[in-house]
Image 1 (cartoon, rainbow, N blue to C red):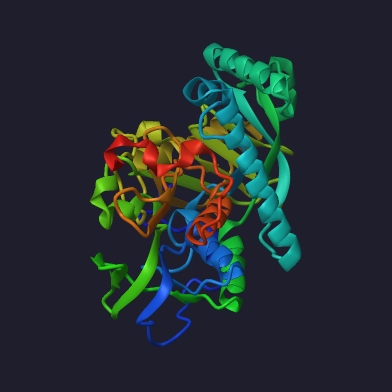
Image 2 (image 1 turned 30 degrees about the vertical axis):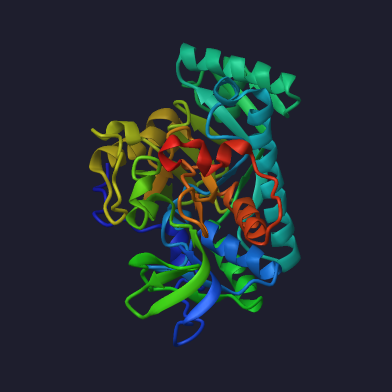
Length: 409
């Protein structure tokens, strides 16, 4: 095994535009909406507010998409974080399917945006296989298939022979193929969304930290080292880091570090992306032949829970990631690893995000707690927040409401 890097260096951030943007030399003293966070959530909110004619200032402590958005595994997945069987048990069939339909709608919005603006972000539609390594996983996949098929979702079940044929590996006992899935280079997508938001009049300021939000009569004062800004509304779009400004969220959105590797290009192996070990390991092969594999948090003593540092990698997780492909695919026995990196996700107690007005904090909205599933939610979440600010009624699953938590009542 190669020696793992000490510094986390994301492949996705190696070729990005607009990472460092300051639309104006000075910050405005007041405006209607301040967005905190420059990942997919923040730029999406800026884009949709601009579409509605709202003046927006976006503040990002680092560069655009330098947080979790620029450090993910490249997936654009449909559905909820939970397996559909578990989601139905938790929320009921109607709400579980509402979450699924919401992600379908969001991915369609992304496709329309990419087509309209001719965005080169490697958006690629395919399928997703959930593969079983144990008899228990196989039985769970069978149950999932039956529930999804009954719900009318496009899915098929693989027995062991089919899994071996499809994966070119004898290690998988079977699985379930979801026929709705996509890949995307998220940093390039965010750059394009930011470009349109700028054209619509948004003011984007990277390298600008928000240190405090103060309430003053009917307005909010956003304090930065550069100046203070008066705003009518504030949108928290920092995901795992939101508790720094609003400690009331410290137990509701917990930072969890994910780790990812990317290989040198190899010949095409699969025409689908895949998950295994209950989704703990997730993999795709890019059009250029590189394989992206993430997961293995379970090898870390604390499962990378409550970790905010995305500059370092965890050696035990690194070892697991680097051994997985050679151990499960003979053709990858000598595959070379190009890069390895980490990113900080925000996990919620019920695996659903918090999208909406923050109870107890009038004028403040939140988009966070995606639990590793933000790419197929945030663009639509930004639209929903924009609609709320304009007094419109958004189409949003009830289970995304921040008010569901008693801690916020």
